Image (cartoon, rainbow, N blue to C red; front, top):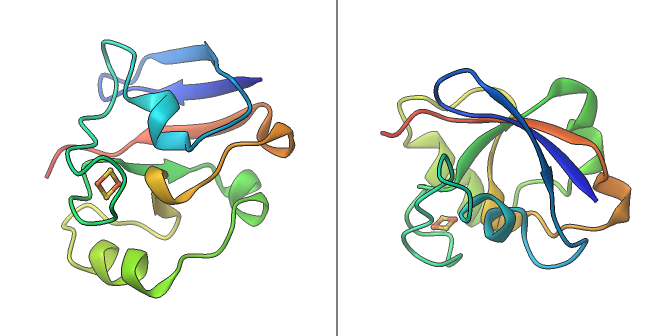
Length: 103
Ligand code: FES
């Protein structure tokens, strides 16, 4: 499956990834990728992304711990998500997202 990723320099990348694991796992490998410092424990917020508005209904709703962490971030926006909390699957093929700035 493919992801369309805008990095922190505004460059768009088409990323070919397996349709499994979490979105964070797909986004930490590239040079421009995420730190994902806590390894997916929903405690560091270094996997913060903005999901494109047209895709937001296809990702699962925020759970309370993710929501709480996001509300503490300076750069949080309406469609902010912690990518470690989004499982990948074929239904997200073509997902568009932007990496949020580092806090
Ligand atoms: S990887 Fe730490 S919150 Fe997602």
